[in-house]
Image 1 (cartoon, rainbow, N blue to C red):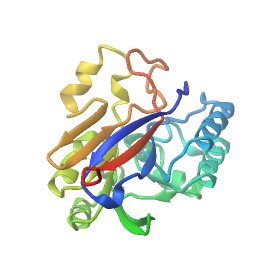
Image 2 (image 1 turned 90 degrees about the vertical axis):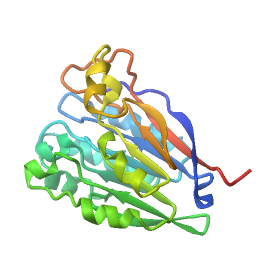
Image 3 (image 1 turned 60 degrees about the vertical axis):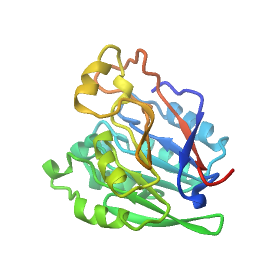
Length: 245
């Protein structure tokens, strides 16, 4: 896992309540036996120096069985000592053992099929998370009906899920922003083109109707520990209301 410098992305949203909110967005850490403790400590140190209100991790935290990386996950827990951390499952998490992962990430807030209210500038913001699309193959519930009902409340809403394909939930409900990962930005060019065949967005910022969509390229790698023309990413997503001049 090669750690980059953090970058800030300014995103236009609709609700005034969200103006100025800063979210640390991490994704696809793919922690396995090869990822060093020093690497994770460096990640915590980088995040400690950043200015944000809370963090979200949009899936694929692990890439091996939890029993082999417990000490590393304990280090990751330290991220919550900085600011609150909310996370959802990715396909690798459900494959290697989501319940075991939840037992280790005791400092984080698990958001699969859940909604929480976060206070920002004396206003309530709704954060909604959906389980990964692969969940059903591993006996993990993915409650699309519940999430659709939670999103359709016309409140200031942030929606998180692992795969870009789930953007339709955000657009249909006019959520302010959808945060996701999964693609690694293609990881190794020209595999970008293959990813584009199965995902609606590769990486970066997009707008659909009244919803902003941000696809994080992630920190880790899958398969080959190598990236080309798809650098890893630590992002601060800064929300700017269209109504505030």
